[in-house]
Amino acid sequence: MAVNDPIERRSFLQAVGLIGLAVATEGLTGAARPLPAAVRVTRPGPDDPPIPNEIVQKIFTERFQNRPIQRGHVTLDVAAMAEDGRYVPVIVESDLPMTADTYVKAVYLVVDHNPDPLLTVFHMTPALGPVAIQTRIKMKRTSWIRAIAETNSGELWADYVKVETTLNGCG
Amino acid sequence: MPETGKTRVVVPERIQRGDVIRVQIVVQHPMDTGLFRDANAEIIPAYFINDVQIHYGDEQVAQFEWTTGISKDPLVSFQLRAEREALLTVTSKDNRGKEYRGSAEIKFATT
Image (cartoon, rainbow over all chains, first blue to last red; front, side):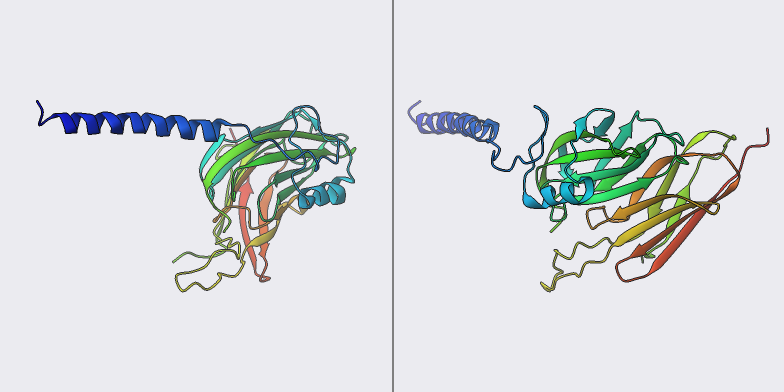
């Protein structure tokens, strides 16, 4: 019995240590990090992600002249956890009409924390069907992705998804 | 050996006039960001497609602005109204000025 004691004690301590570690990391990653309040420039809705940096602000100024962006009519479909930042599949869909008079003239994809946040712009015409774009993008790190549809009358509709990623796909 | 710029345009086999069809484009391209280094710690220069134009017959129906944020061997699909029989052509240009082209015939099923 006395011979076994140290081993039991060690394995017990190891087990306790593992549980402790698990609780500690849970506490660290689970804690909500406050978003910087100073960078709110345009008027996001209550659940919209704030403008994270000047580059994204510049994109919104140059491309949209800071017109308000409303949430709705656009669905951005991305897995909340991207395993490989080099290939992140995204689907952007919209129920906005595609007729000769009213149509979506462009779809923008913005990844807040990429080196080049304005990732792509799809310029469209009414010859296309309803917006249902699929592609694969790169992500540098955990970031909000913004899918913004611009109608020919200048309205801006958007959807946002925060995607966690660990493997840097941008360098 | 990858064939840089090889473009495939995929459309459904059976199309009827007026159908909304899914068009898929696959272009072989490294889409290097210019931020990675090779085994000798040399920067791999940025090399990527930045402009894609879609023509349906003579009409330009779409234009895409791309950056290095599009994954290697870009793959994009979208919906098109098949209103007439014509060639759907995809022309892409990269930042070294090279131009690549691929196409698919939009033809209506006879039955």
